[in-house]
Image (tube, rainbow, N blue to C red; front, side, top):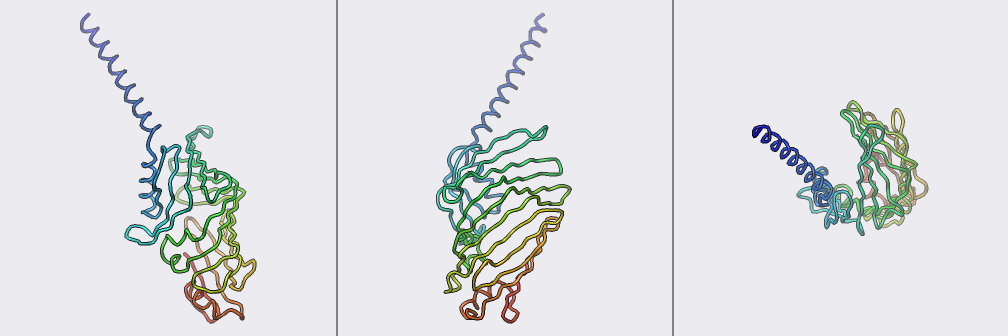
Length: 267
């Protein structure tokens, strides 16, 4: 009888210890400090994305966002105001789903909604329809060539919905996103503004990228395709006849000079 009582008591203590451990783990995850996300973002971006002065938890918090050229770089640019996030786990059918509401004081009139669905050999990142406006000066923090060109003016993003889907080591784009650059300027030219431009990414079996000039003295055009996980883009920049001298330095930086034009290639 004593042996039976010992086994019963030992089993009860084991269950109690397991319950306490699960509870402790749940409490740790639930109240994980925002600084954990700060460290993860820095490591995942190789130091190019920094979340400083973080407050709150991994699930709900805020921080200052800074872009930089990475470890050893002296370039850095901070987004005005703070960025707030609200991260919630959920289910989509039988699949785990993470939903993120992201709001930047300076740039998002309404919170941007993202969802991430992980899988064993695939994942989906989805951006809901929305609009946002970001300062192009933030790009200078990434270093070359942005710190040389030093773009000035707003970056206007619009999407009716965009998804990135990775399956069997292949990337697919669904939906579209449009970037408008009205009244764009650069420190390399005294001509202000250079012009207004539109860059559009259209998803499909083979995603396409299109660049066009809406108006301006600096004429930009180009097109590209997203194959697997690689983007290949070819375009050109040229100045109108009345402003060639004012735009010469900028054209030299933008790509390979070929007479009056500058050839731009990526990928």
